[in-house]
Length: 220
Image (cartoon, rainbow, N blue to C red):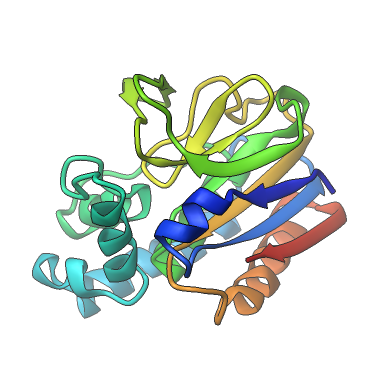
């Protein structure tokens, strides 16, 4: 598995940070009807159980927002990707299927209320560090354009930053040519439910993406 660690500086500011990482070979599909049925069922559950006013107080999301403030990032401006997706769902906005890997990524984020990032391993240059964004640092976020990542907790390889809990970069995004991925869950609330997450993520990847050579680890 690729080498990943959390910087001492980030841990000092927010000690409860942790990562749950999965590396797999898989088969990419444009759309999987069975997976999409599971996802739309989750959409219906969320609409029945949660209101927009409750989002800020949801377990995991609440701690992530607090962490962002500690890093001097406004969580309403640099909204967590998991929260952004949840808000779209509760507002009744259309959510499209992208491909089986991105769809699994999104399902996990709205089950555990944490941001999940998935990256094409062939586009990474390890080792990888979860660190604090540097002064004037930015990257092109998927569907966002230039994203100011100064002070934002970011995943970075030897080329530079490529992922965060707000938006991942175009440089390492999954495409129809991707064959091997690194999927990371970013937790700002410790590691208590990360084993449960890894078990469910492996189950989804095996069932809907024919995942092989699965490796996983929790980093604290």
